[in-house]
Length: 76
Image (cartoon, rainbow, N blue to C red; front, side, top):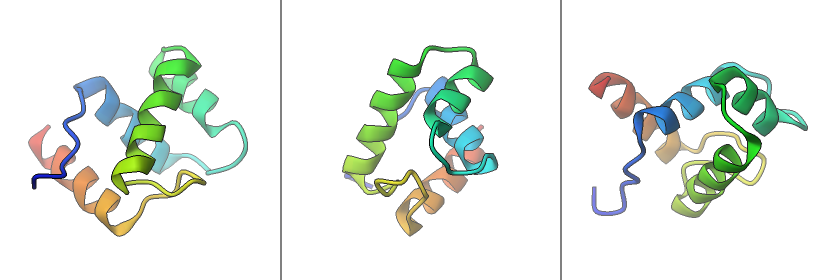
C-alpha cells in the first residue's frame, strides 16, 4: 500500500476509460476526448502510472494496475 498512487476521481475515470478502448496510437487523445479534457493532463497521468508500474509503455495494464483499478472501482 505504501507505493499506491492516489488518483483523483477524474484520473480514475481516465483509467476506467483506457480499460474500455483499444490500445492503439492516439489512445491518450481518445481518453481525453471521452473525458472532456485536454491531452496534456491525461498524458502526464499515464506517464505517472507507467512510473508506478500500473501501465506498460504501451498503456496496457500490468497486474498491479489491474488490482489498483479494481480497488478504485470498489471505492467509487
